[in-house]
Image (cartoon, rainbow, N blue to C red):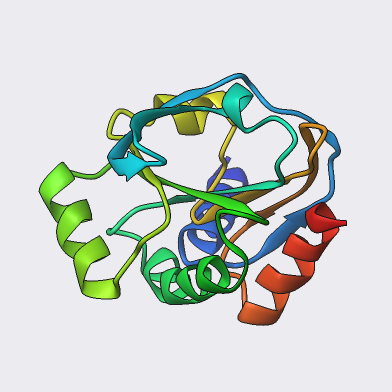
Length: 165
């Protein structure tokens, strides 16, 4: 019993501290409607269905998560390089107070769409196991890759290229 508790604690700590787990599990994602902090294309509600035909990267994060905070500037850079026209990036702020999230996004200069998930329901729908968690969805709506943990700028670009092809 103690051994099982130890293993569970170590795995939990690894996920919480941002150890990367690259899971290539092609599949589809749940149809989701996001409520955004700021308007995107004139709307404050965004559904995945409305993005059909576009490659989409969804990144689950929280201000309470050091690896999430560390990778956000790199995601912003990717958005500036490829965003909106070529690659849709959606951040999903999970288990946070709205003001904490807004303050952090202002500090970092986040301009890509960020959805609210204070309850964690959207993360649960996506079966997120740790944070940050990133889903790479191709133009046909198929998940080409998922990644739990911090991603380097090179890893972000490499996975983005998978769905841009």
